[in-house]
Each structure stands twice: as structure tokens, then as C-alpha cells.
Length: 317
Image 1 (cartoon, rainbow, N blue to C red):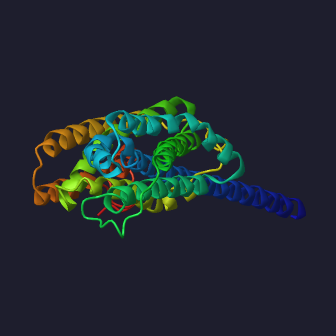
Image 2: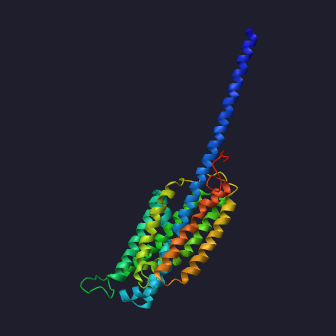
């Protein structure tokens, strides 16, 4: 009797251990799925942030829209104006400074410093155009800005663009594995070419016949998009060590995003080029953000997560 009772007791201990181990395995599986899901939302949110940063920080593309007015305001020759355009490109040669900044500052601080540089540089140029020598500025109220100082402003503006690019590159590197990193980088960079179309639409929506509005937008929009992208960037990991491998559905998601990027480009270039009224420009700008909302939706559909046409797990209704 004693031996049988001892055997039953041992079997109960073994069964309890198996049940406990099975329960822990189940928790690990569900916990791992939740971690993967959170990681997926985090990196796609970072990608959306980099896309919008790139789309609204190509501020040197609209120089031709206000260059004639700036030339008249400063009273300089065409050669001097060409030097200002060159200064914007020359500022990008100082882009290595963004790498030095990242060695001593967090990524979000470098982003906000980039926005501050652009704000200061373009706000100063806006002052030169509107107050320092414009036709509407009286001689007593206007203060002439030396040409070398304007050259410096253009140099800083070009440098800020390179800083934005560096931030976007680092975000993609930290958020995606080596196999899909090039796809994320190329997708982000492709939207930089749409900056001119975006700024033209914004200018037409606000003041179609004012060249100065481009400088105002160049100063404000990069700062605004940096502030809006800040929450997603704060979720980004500090290094890429957490990345193991790319999920199998990443290829399908990127294919959908490339198609979406192509449609967005055609939409902005074709419809934006025929925009002559502010009301039409506002309609196009209102519709454009909805096209970029497909990033999270593509990811959810590829994973089969709730919200992608399915009910909650285990819900048979």
C-alpha cells in the first residue's frame, strides 16, 4: 500500500510538471507573437515617419520658384544668384557633420536640430525677400542683409537637408534587417523627389502668386513633420542588434508599398501640375495622406491580424 501510494504521488508530480511546462511553453508562444506584432507596428511606423520626413525636406527643389524675387530683393546679378543656388548644394558637402552629431547626441535630438537649422536659414531668407528689400518694405523699416550672410543661410539650409537624410538612413538601418534594409531605404529616398510637387500644392493652396510663401513653407514644414514624426522615432531601437531576420511577409508588404509610392507620384505630378486654384490644391493635399495610410493596413493583411478583415482570435461569430 505504501509503495502504491508513493508511485501515485510520483506520477502526480510528473504530470504536474508536464502541465506546468506546457503552460509555460504556451505563454512563451503567445508572448513571442505579441512581441513580434509590436515590433512590426514599430518598424512600419518608423518607415512611415521617414517617408514623410523625406517628402517634406527636399526644400532645395523649389529654389527656382522664388529665385527671381530673391534676386530683385537683394539687388544682385544673375551670377551672384547662381552662387546662392550653388551654396545650397555645397552645404550638403558638410553632411558629414551629422555623423559627428550622432556620436554625441540621440537621434531625435539630431532630427530637431536639423529642423532648427532649416527654420533659421529659410526664415532669414524670407526676411531678406519680404522685409529687407522688397517693394512693400519702406526704406526706413528695411535693413539690408549682406550678401555673404545670405550665402551662409543657403549653406546652412543645404546642410540641414543632409542631416535629415542621415536621420532617415539611420532609422531604416536600426528598424529593418539586412535583407529588407535596402528596400526600406530606397522607398524612403524615393519620396524625396516629390518634395517639389508637395510644396507647389501647398503654395497654390495658401497663396498662388506669392514667391515668398515657398520660403515660409521651407522653414515651417520640415519642423512640423519632425515634431509629428517624433513619437515614432522615440520608439526606434538605439541599435540594430535586436533584429534577427526579416519576417516572410515583408516582401509582400514592400511590393504593396512600391505600388503605392508609384501611384502617389503619378497622382501628385499629373494632378498637381494642372493645379491653378487654391481650392483644387486643397482637395489634392487632403486626399494624398490617405494614400500613405496603407502601410499599416498592408502589414496587418499580410500577417492576418485583427483589423485586416478578420475577427478577434477565437471569435467564431
